[in-house]
Length: 368
Image (cartoon, rainbow, N blue to C red; front, side, top):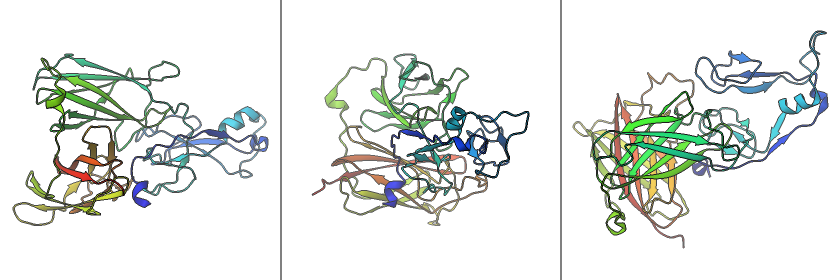
């Protein structure tokens, strides 16, 4: 279904290489920027204009003349490295999109490129907290380092997902506190960010990133405030599904419509938001792009075992001038609730320079 295609889907693929020796002297590899095709290089790297990873683009067989006398023909091994084929394809703008066949990205319509991850396993993530037991509302510095599980080497090359290299979610155990922040990339390959924990207790930290030699990762860790004593009973979330889906936040009246109205676990769900000015009742039409779209949604199950990271159906064109784009009043998200139970939704909209976060609680019935 189209709805499922817009969720974060991770499909591990096995690389397949072409062994055709006849391409050895006919095919020449040029690395180009998907956003700036005028940027070309004979070697892989990043675009000097937008920092996107350059992708290999081979000239069509038969159109490239044989090498000049002072240029040796490519060997069979070099040809195999240059002319790969694959059972997996991804979008350079939306690397979370994975398909088994070539085609167009369902989000931005860019041509999918072959992907052959070197390591499909979960990577190792190390978190350092300073101080280790932070006090409430006092500065907390977090540092994250990622390591390849096969080589043990620290990863220093990452893909951009939704305008950022790293998405960090800090959520209290009872789901009452929520932060969506973006650590800064450091020269040694680590990521750092400073924040505060507004209430005493246990917090779960979700790291969402994409190592270039692996697959998209979502890894979870914990941190507790100073003096916190584990109490499983009091810390257990007690979510109650909302009976109305209308809230006013930051002067915006936010109406949420669920389709279908009866939520069934294991079935596609659409979240339809309608935004109006709480004072005048006028439709909100001045939303600014946030992370490459007109909104952002995270959904967690009550026990925080299920994680859904979703962006709107209405994607912002990759080459659009985001400083001039405006959206609203309607923004829709696709979702998928895998199990019966309660879920907390956090949806974010940006208006001017201000980011608004609204939360709703919903309940999914079992599939009969």
